[in-house]
Length: 241
Ligand SMILES: Nc1ncnc2c1ncn2[C@@H]1O[C@H](COP(=O)(O)OP(=O)(O)OP(=O)(O)O)[C@@H](O)[C@H]1O
Ligand SMILES: [Mg+2]
Image 1 (cartoon, rainbow, N blue to C red):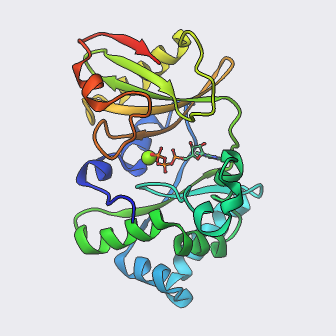
Image 2 (cartoon, protein in one colour):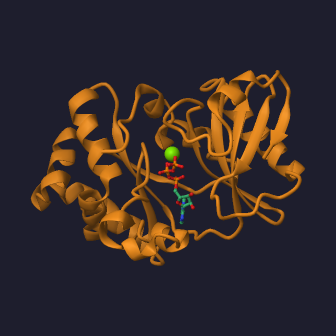
């Protein structure tokens, strides 16, 4: 087990923030399926007859995206699955992420069986969140990484800090100004939901793409920063590493 999702993680589920950005062309068009507790148990145990409604939804999504889809739960992705079935991919991030590409219901069941993150999130959901929150399956059109991903820390007082997300990407000397304005635009849309957030953005030349949001708190990896440093930044700071 690596990490148990918290109330804060649930506040940042994709199904909560994505609708606020639906009319902006800044991120994946997510398809979202709220799971019942009975369906979660059926996924855990491979009980296919109880998953007919989910299967029909998956087939519909795949038919609309025959090149495949990126699979995750509302809480997190199964990007750790390579550790169970493909340890030779240790240094190949793109190949690790490619294991999250699905073209069938069987692919989803396999990821839920072998990813520790999926196993933990389903178990914790059943133990702790019965009836209070919904756990969703999220599918997005498959879109392989093209540029450099940045992890951006943003407070609604205008404070912005960033660093590259994958440690094998060289950090550039200056942050693109477009990244700061992009994050402010996204955060502006979400001001009713969050007073601080972590925004992952891929920058590919002039194209910027929102990967996802996470809580500004323990549980989210601050990468080249510490949470103490970030919390201590004066209001309105713009900083990067
Ligand atoms: N639609 C997509 N197609 C292909 N790859 C994707 C897609 N969306 C995201 N990814 C890749 O998968 C990685 C993990 O996705 P995401 O950030 O949504 O998951 P997460 O498990 O919540 O991550 P974290 O642990 O950083 O919070 C991203 O860094 C990105 O490289
Ligand atoms: Mg996340």
